Image (cartoon, rainbow, N blue to C red):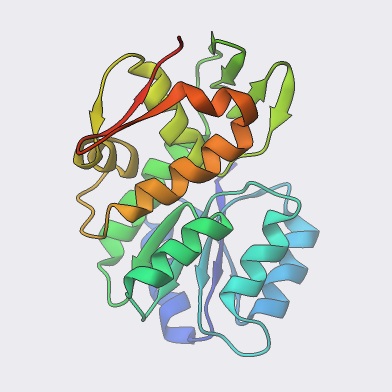
Length: 224
């Protein structure tokens, strides 16, 4: 069965373009022309939808509103599409739980490559659980537990935490974190990382102290 992707955009031409490129990689595409239709479709077919390409500026219900509602019940990977490439928009999107952020105009081939990368990371074939200091990471389910209690995290938060845990005791510069976690050359402000770290620390509670700030460098995960 082909992987199903929900494409949400009010422009028919954009939906057709994305559908054609995704179909070349054998993805099954469901289209929605506005936010309200997207929510209806997702509610009906969320069991088969593995990723959402979501436009920001749409009639009836914008992308941010759709994102907020979906994140109340689902961690499905979401890539936001927008004509506005301003930095604060990206930070806002990440705060709401966006997994990827692409500004128009973009290369469809690059977008498809990012779709493939996210789907690969969210559907690991191994069943590996790692545990440090009461923090348990299950790679197969992409879940995090703190002292046995599940902690809800977005894909990017999960990947950032896992990257730091995998490099326990090592000081990680911000540019290295961006290249490894965001998986491509990111030209935005390093506040993106700081924003994610802040949220992760909050979600880890007392265990958040394991993430150390290395002044002038970046961050380090260390249990002491």
